[in-house]
Image (tube, rainbow, N blue to C red; front, side, top):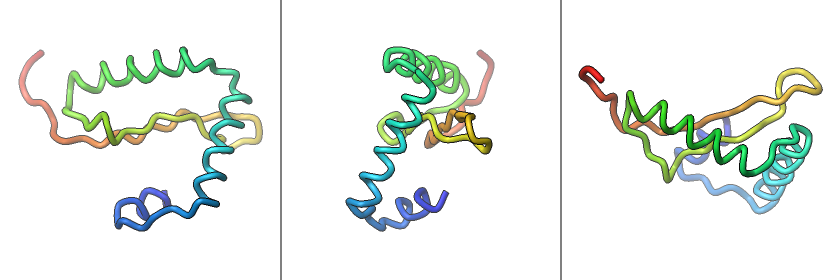
Length: 90
């Protein structure tokens, strides 16, 4: 959450922090044994469902796997900026 606030206020991430974040990302994906093709499918399905109800900023979204609260758990984390809600019947 702190990283999101830093990005919001324009503070740049150090190269050390970037490398650490990328390494964590790789380790979590390896632990979860999720193939990149599967992650792409998950991402596209999430985008499809959310897009029915709101306009989103695809270029600024992040959908990743992260360490969960428990030792061996993995969490799907989605940071999807919303431009506006879509109103009306579908």
